[in-house]
Image 1 (cartoon, rainbow, N blue to C red):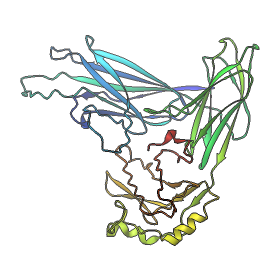
Image 2: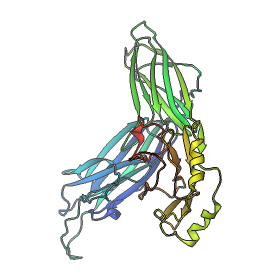
Image 3: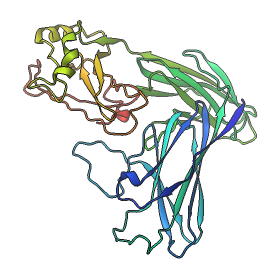
Image 4: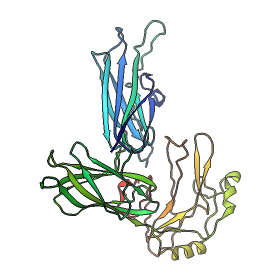
Length: 402
């Protein structure tokens, strides 16, 4: 395999004491496809004057969007799902410069963000001209190592591969089609070059921060070993790394097979209520849910749709995206705010956040259970917000935000 190294650099930025989120300095990097190793070079420095004291710089990392930071300990709204960013601290003490490396193996391709800031502002008043603030600088650079010819696994096709040594793990990738409900990776054979016991470590998926959904399994001997993932990310390349954990002087021959369980999608509506398309111009109607302002699906029509959904594993509901202004967006259900929900298969609402302008901010989802056809005293509806693919079964909630 041919490895290519690349280097990405950004200009240093001057840090200030933290009083609001505008004090944090943001760095944006894009990790190329087929990257197997990532290294960030973080350089922090301060001035040399007597006004410069020991200082701690906090650095946050996040994949896909700017980091969620809370240096002031502010309370988030009730029912808000917040995952604090992965962060490290860099201390500038007697030295005027600090160099720190952060390494990530098999990082996810795409947008990565780094935010850096000083501690909370002391709140004291300084007269301009009588005191000179100490300059604190921070710079982030990125090194990546990627494969130019990463092998591709075809569904259902056994692919023999060789791990030359523990220092050179095997990297392959597989494409996840749309409507994939489950992926299964099987290690069918494992043979060493010196007839020693076979031991390999299989890592499925890439690292994302602050949460990573990698699946890892260790396989020993010449027996079949498999790993399954529910609701893998749709229409994405999924990396697979296999590394030898046995003898250092022996190569390992393995055979990998990837298989998928497809999901048959259905639709919860048999017609499009085009009268709801102009609701953004007339404004929300009285009694509507949130800011949707759409008409309800007739009860008879909804019941007929639900009764014909038994052969599908998910029901999709058409959603309209409205860009209200530069910083806000609204999603409306095309056929009204009423969504038929049943226990046989989930109802899926696709919220498009891939326009390139949707990074950061907050996603607010308002749900109301206003009517039901269930002949029971109580009914429970579970709502799950997930990225990349919908959660189709209740036992696969590791990617669920609620």
